[in-house]
Image (cartoon, rainbow, N blue to C red; front, side, top):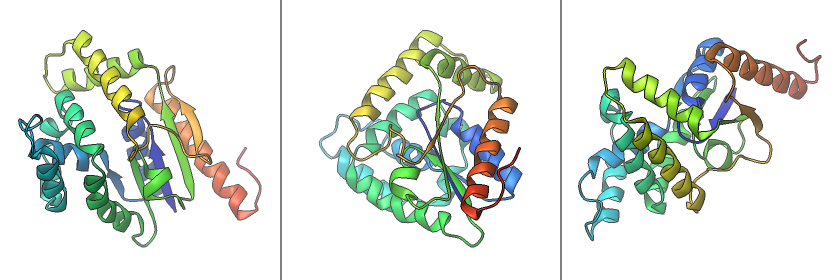
Length: 217
């Protein structure tokens, strides 16, 4: 079973994807970390004339070992860098095989990102699109950072999220928008456990319908 989980920054998609992976005993890939790692690799070169070439080279040379420093990878500024490299078509192409190979491993997988249901796994068994309003997403990301001892400027963080949303909406290569056959789940007013229960219910119902059996009550 392949489960695709998409949505904007800090919508809760990573937390839900991780929870779904545990529930169904499937491997999980946070594909946003790939773009964040590439962004970190070219940090400080954003205005350079060879920025795109450097980002493409970094994407082609990406190694799984670069995905382990979660403190740096999940920092707010790293998310901004990720959105800048994600608009480069050759970067997305370089990372496509990595993601596709992960999804097609025996038994299936859970992947979360921006374009999983639309480009990486258009044939996924279940597609979820997670959304929440900007203020809720800002507060969630702030609490995540504060839990790691990071001092947070909520005003700046809110505008970083809004800026990333605007960039993602204009990205011709990526997915700010849900796939036509994705199930929409708004987590603005839901806690983690309630959101996960809702996501599991969607997956169980969808798989039951595909199998032609009775839907879960």
